[in-house]
Length: 412
Image 1 (tube, one colour):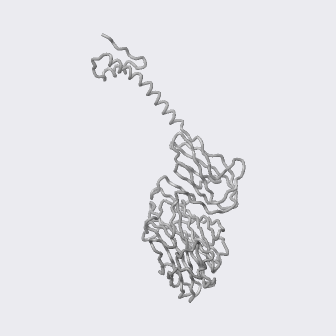
Image 2 (tube, one colour):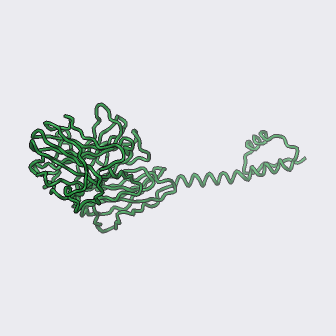
Image 3 (cartoon, rainbow, N blue to C red):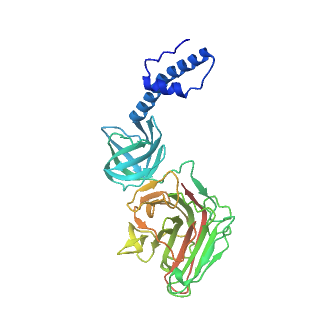
């Protein structure tokens, strides 16, 4: 009779327990081979566990690489605002997020494997910048601290993943609406939508690829302060997960509309987003106040939202020519920075405020920078995205007209 010896790497008690748990096998050779295989596997498993445990314990972010802007340590880099930050990072584990710090303050936070952000800063200043990346273990690594000088203002370039709503001026669905309700404001409301035809007025000499399509807004004033609102909205695609917006259009004021006839020309972009406490309205309101010749934004002042001078003057537009306008607008957190969750939803979207980024008129781009809070309308609104134009008269018995062409909104 052959008696199997206990392997030296297994204790006697363990050996006995394993002996009791092994069924009786009459082939003594197969029994001995099974015990030998078990003994050989244990060191391998121990080694594998050691390697895996060591890998988890030592996982860290190894590098953070900045692709945009092209920064250089030890020198100040000239940049334009909004600043496009793009970066990637390396780790043994998954990269789970980034924060961009300017002058030690969080200006952008995302929870994605790579960084792609547009950060709005005022022009004319030198700032310190660094980027921190995190991995799934909670480890992080920061770049060196760089110096940047914001020398100018530009309109950002949307990423390839952006969504563009084109031909808003002549949409295939969701027609334009004229609102002559008392809630628009003014002492009376007498607007209408006219035809958009090619002719001597509007002048097509500098038109934006005039195709005979567009909107024609008319206000025939019946009182000294007559207002009318014209709007388009899209309830099917409200782009609720988007926080960056480029609103672009051309408009034309005919020569028959004199400066002294106009109280204000208003241009608004809006979005309604369902958040954890209800549907929030983000109203990016702006206007040229013809009475004061000041550009104004819809901003907080003394506890309420009202028209606040943006510091841009003059703003009265020349008649008989087309003007090209582009806004860059953002949804941001109450602290003023963007936080982009991995998956958008009412519980994760913390961008409850709105930032006026830049305004470009006829190729001249200006920094705006104002921040306002969103509101919760009562009764509640459904998610939607849209644009609106408003005409305000400064006298009774006058006619104000505005043509709009090539209107679009790009969001991401």
